[in-house]
Length: 414
Image (tube, rainbow, N blue to C red; front, side, top):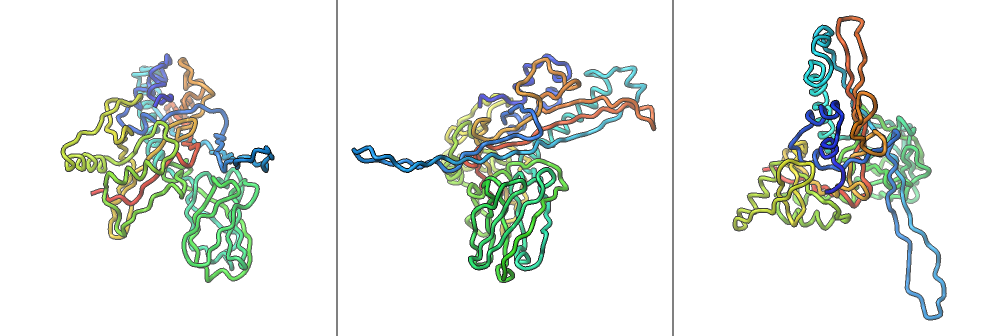
């Protein structure tokens, strides 16, 4: 895991303000410590994703040419989201103690930065931007749509509405994502169920639950996605449906070493891989090893993280208690998920942070955005003898390949 991580970058800083931020976000949280950063300009991160490869074939000794074919690729634009928090300090205390590290304002800025980074780490797993939708028509055939689960990066606020289409002769449904050029492939739905509908750019998708008896005629309508959370999409949303491993048993699956083996088979990028799971499952992992004869896992040291982490088949296991123990599977109310990710800015999962194309060792977040952070002095308040400071972070998780992330859901936590 040699890519630039936030703790490693902050070790290089010569800026007192960034040094204060480094102290504020010092953490033993493994995922937040080791996820690589990519520094970007702009309000979105453009991410090319490889699609279908071109054809190739053997030819005869006569050298006759084959038919031409080219590979396919999707380009998605992942919106940068922002976290903003204000803080007020008494002007008298500010005048007497100053505004740098160790001052009252400096102490409050540290606390605000710590809270900001804690929110980033939480939403890195649990974030979901889209929280609702509205259909232009709820009449036939769209009365058949009884529910929608949202994929990542469906941004109607920036890219306008998407659309749904139904052709009754073939019982086919189509989806076009906000800002996309056309509908994706047809999905036939002859019986009730949940169906993944992909846009022309197949990195944009929804899962629609359909009561097919209510669709009796052709139709087309817009769909506008809404957000009350304003947050970015985390690992839970970034997982492609083809990379989601559902529980086999009706009440969830017991934790086993075999689950980890299966996840390793699904994850194809295999660069800087790491398992990410709740500490309750790490305890179960150690218990499985003891039951197998007292084996101790290989312990690894990872840049950016203080201490060693256990591993399985040389893949680090990162504890992250932001992963919930609240998945309901049958009669089990406290199931959880395991993630396997390639933490890699070239092909895998990373954090895109605003602040230019490289990390400046002397960059001051009071003067410019550095690693996503910006600290702004808003000055005197009119209504009281206080001074206000604003702490901001600009960024978003991104994934280069759908094969770089796997989620095994519905694992019993106890």
